[in-house]
Image 1 (cartoon, one colour):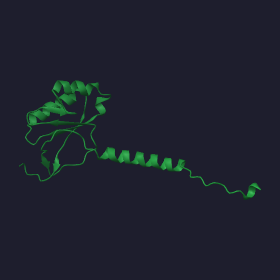
Image 2: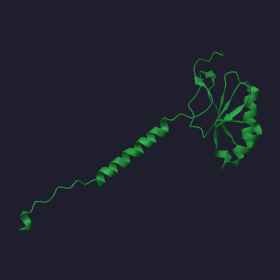
Image 3: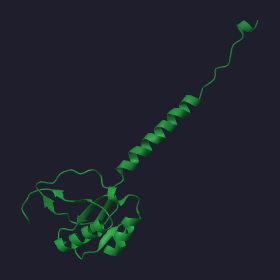
Image 4: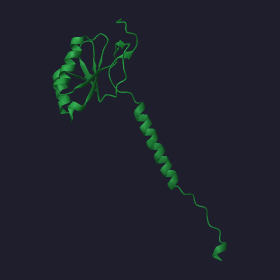
Length: 135
């Protein structure tokens, strides 16, 4: 007689849980790529020959007073060198300098020298794509 007994319908929730976890991970990963890097507001210079660079591991902002900003902190060149030396493999780091439009070349060179003293050789300058007129 067991052959004719009606079985109760069951809802299997394990596949639904798997799908929900997959969607959760997907949305977390997408959201992480949408969050912009934190920094200070600056007016980047323009360049007609600007090229796309790989995403830098460290972005330093230099304002027109020559103050170096990293992760919402102001650093001196000596502090910058010490911070970069404390990182694992400073020679493999990619550093991008985002200098304000009014930042002098001497101030940018001081930051580059501080990076080179730490062993960093991959240094790029951030610009906006635009015309090549110097104004």
